Amino acid sequence: MAEIGSKGKVLRSITVIVIVIGVLVLASVSVSAEQSLKLDFSKNNGTTGPADSNYFTEVVNFLWQKGLLGYQHVWPEMKFDWRIVVGTIIGFFGAAFGSVGGVGGGGIFVPMLTLVIGFDAKSSTAISKCMIMGAAAATVYYNLKLRHPTLDLPIIDYDLALLFQPMLVLGISIGVAFNVIFADWMVTVLLIILFIVTSTKAFFKGVETWKKETIMKKEAARRLASSGTGSVEVEYRPLPGGPSNGARMGSKDSKTSEVSIIENVHWKELGILVAVWVIILALQIAKNYTTTCSAAYWILNLFQIPVAVGASAYEAVSLYKGRRVIASKGETETNWKVHQLVLYCSCGILAGIVGGLLGLGGGFILGPLFLELGIPPQVSSATATFAMTFSASMSVVEYYLLKRFPVPYALYFVAVATVAALVGQHVVRKIITILGRASLIIFILAFTIFVSAISLGGVGISNMIEKIEEKSYMGFDNLCA
Image (cartoon, rainbow, N blue to C red; front, side, top):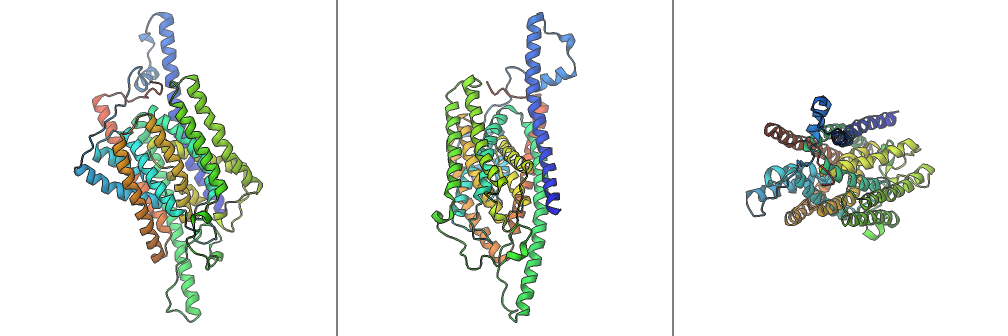
């Protein structure tokens, strides 16, 4: 019953976010349609029809004015000064915390790039994706040799990644397009709602895991005391995420925590993921050589759907029929329902849309979702980061083709994020081993999301107030312009 209740909470949270995104999309479509109808009516009747103006028309004029663009990029000159120093420090800690929590750190990168370095919001989003890509790639390299904390498995759950990652990459393509279309204030509203919900859920999950760890540490201490070895220090054994925690603490006593990469990778699943990434990347590059919004442009976009859906459907059908399992949950058996698999695939798309739209890692949604599924914190973080590596690199290519960021700045901050991710993984892994608290990963996740909500939300609200005072255009931009 507890598991059903937690899944119900996840469903309600996701539903709220989907409704917000849906409202923005419908607004975009309705505004464009209304503008077209107004133009057609004017042409047919030879008048602009001022007498027919009403409240809805005023809203349409606010959201859409033909020929007006709300976006003008601001790229400061790259030179060594206090801005670079402060930005480097903030970016370093953001990448370190983000990589450990499995969320990338985009919620810290974007405000830093906007407020400290001086980029405009959308260019900051693009460079943030570059930093996430560097941090995620470094983290994946670090994790490829590691094993599951309690089972004889890789720390990366490849079946879980195969279910979510193709849909995540598909969502990224949609999110990047929305980043071009949506006004900054719309992004701010979505961001605040999303981050408050996910950070709250992650925090309470961390508290729950901390309590379980405390109980298990006390039980282990009592067992040692009863065996007459009470003076011996209790050895740390990480907490699994599944319900049957107490039964498996000794399941991996004889196994090493690191093995060679060749032995630790599931090559079939990795091959499918790489194939999906290559095909969709090729479609994105080909799309760049077509006229925006032409028939070829939309055909190449639509070709991404069967590629991504086909790969995720292959994994979903295998899970449904029992040919595959999410092994990182341990002994927990899951009788997958069709609506559950559809929901989780939809979450992958949603995570991609949010990532492409806000310049964040999809881990802001995938991380808390994996924890609710009963995945151990270490595996949740590693798998979310693994999926983010593909999606973030896809975003970087798309933003580069759209000429959304200066390459020198991007290369510098990618290097900073890469080093920070490696340092963060090593340090936090040592701390967890000393303290015996894997729940620290969940608290880092919640903290990173909450700080992102405050920083990004504050920047967005500040920019919105400034635009209102200046009476600037605050509507949708034209994707085809």
